[in-house]
Structure formats: structure tokens, C-alpha cells
Image (tube, rainbow, N blue to C red):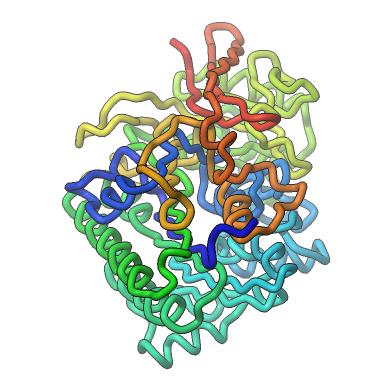
Length: 490
């Protein structure tokens, strides 16, 4: 049964729920105060943008959609370098070599198109993230605008149209004030004001970008949070001024959180010093390497030479390093990894055919950073020390914003601790429009009372080898496990 005439989805990349306050983001805080807030919503693992974006669009974890990292070695596509899913050319290469989509699972966009529903996206993230939110936008007859330009969308005419109407695309500055203003105008004035699609989604690349490079609670980051909050206020005004405002459902979300970095642990260099021929993902060259390594605050290690004894050796070596927080290996066991002391990739929904032979997570904890925010951990590099990072299993990386308002929630405002996450967004949108979700969507419609009131019971899994001990807490809803927090136990 359809309960909304239209659905509007607003995504703030990287926004932590504990940063949604009246002083930082008054418009969003007020909206939350009138709505239903899922306070324990979770991202997926790895808690990276393209992985989470794919989970938003498919309503499923990586085991279903196959995007197992922002960067991952995929020899079926190329043995020359590690695939970078942010790049349009890498996505195009993958589709060419696979003779099909990189994200093969049915998506929200696919389901909407099958029911002759329109879907418009305004995106300010990378080309890969724009692709992932509606991979078959052109074939589905949908419209996707990217502030990154024509090459960053499968519907480049959308960029041409908006440049003709609103002028040249804005310059790339940090923080992204100009981009925030531009995409807000496109969304409010054109998408909501004229296109009037059944589903409209806007993706702000802030505060994520500033979290990374300007720190989580700096003055500059505070200023861009004020700006994106004001942009959200403009969007709410555009909705509320419509004659059909009461029938429009509004979903506000983030794809992951962030924690602050406390120091550098260069795993690739350490592995090279231990005698392995290492190819870094950033090098775009694998020839002659024994292993490929990605980084951030977690990463994959692939055995390019196929030597599984090397995998086992490296896994044990990792567990002897103080810098390491968690280690995962593929296994037929749903909990224990193939190497003693490791946990199974199946426990975190990563057990797709494309999964790596070894996954590490750097040490992190809930200590406070220089600005008093909890969540602090090591990184391999990529951002200045003190800057934000995500990808791992720290509770402040995993906890996401997920708020239902407008026609998506009637009655008094409230919050719930029910298990939920990014995988629930697509099923909820479909349910609001009276469309059944495909079987591949592991998420649930948050319109159901059962999902809204589901009790959360924490389950804890431990593993260790020698002096190394790791622990992962999850909550279960049906067959799906939502990761809550994981790390090393001292």
C-alpha cells in the first residue's frame, strides 16, 4: 500500500549522529526532533563510501553487491593494477571486461524503473559514487547530475542542462562551499521545482571531505557543517512550499561516520621490510609483486602470486603487530577465519567471490581526539594526522544518521534503538511507494512496526592468537548481522 506520493532522500557523506546538534546543525536537529530517528543505524564493512553507497542502492551488504572496498584487486578485470572504484574509467573498464555491470544486484533504480517510476539524483561525490547510487541510470530512463562534470555521470545531458541554467560548474575549493550551494540550487529549484520525480536524492560530499582534511571539529569544518545544514533548510522550505507537501516522505541519512587519526602505521612499508614484494594500491602497478595492499585505517592484502602459505604467514605477522586491531580471512565457518586467531569475513558480510584473502583493521578506540570527540585510531596515510578516517569497525565509523520524516512518519517524534542501517534505505523507499523489494535486498522497510520496534541484543565474538585478542559486537535482525563495534582487546 502506497503511503507517500513522493520520496526525498538527503545524504550527508560521513556525518556522525553525535554531531547533529542545535548549535552545529539546527535545521537537521529540528527536523530530527519532529521525526523518527534510528539512533543505532549502522554502515556496512568496510565502512567506505563506495561500499556503503552500493549498499544503499542495492539494500544489501557487499556479499550481495560485490563492491568489497573503495579499491580492490580484481584480476578478472585487470592484473595490472588495483581497481579504484572512484574513477569512471576503472568502472568502465570493469564493465567492459565483465561484459556486464560491476554492480550486478538489482538496485533501487532498477526496481523503480520496472514500475515506471522516475528517479533523479544530484551528486557531489566521485564518479564512482555517483555511478553506484544508480548504476543503470541511463538504461532506466533516469536522470543523474554530477557536480564533477559530464564524465562523472551516465547521463551527461543532465550536466549540460544545469550548466545552461545555473552557469559553469563551481571551482573545487576546500571546504566545498561553492559545490554545496550549486547542488542545492539544482536540487531545490530544478529537481523539486520542475522535474518532480517520484524519488529525488541529493548527496552532499560534506562534511566528509572537510572531516578528512580539516579535522572533525575545527572551525573550518564547523563552517561547512553550518553551510550544508542551511542547504538542508532550503530543501525543506522547497518541499514545504509545495501543495502536496503532506504526501512527501523525507529520509535523511549518512553513509558512514568518521574517527580522528592519531598516528601512522604504514603497513605496506612494514610488509616490504619483512621481505615481501609489495604493490601499493596507489601505485597503479602490480607487475613483479607478491602481494597488493590497500590502506586507510583498514585494508585488503591480496596474494598476487597465489601463495596461501604467504597469506597465513602474513596473517600471523599482523597479529603480532601492536598497530593491528583486527584480522579477517575467508572461511566456510561463519565466525572463525581460515587462519587461527582471525575472524571470518562472513561475520561482516564481506564473503563475496571478489573478497580478498586477508583483511586488516588498524587499532582504534573510543578515546577522545583533540576536540573532545570520541573515536581515535591509526591510519596508513592519505590524510594529515589528526584528520578523519573511516573504513573500519569503530562504533563511531559505523554509526550513521538515519531519520524518517514527512509522510514517512506520523505521530509524535521519537527515537529508536532498533537494529537498522544503510541497507534499509532502498526497501523503505520502495515500500513508501507501494513497491515490493526484490529478494536480493537484505534490508527491511523501516515503515514496518516490526523493524521500528525490533529489540537489539548484542552478540559478541572473540578470536585470538598468542597475545593477540580481537572482539566484534553485532546485533542480529533476522539473518542479517549489523556490526556495532570491533577492535583489539588488551
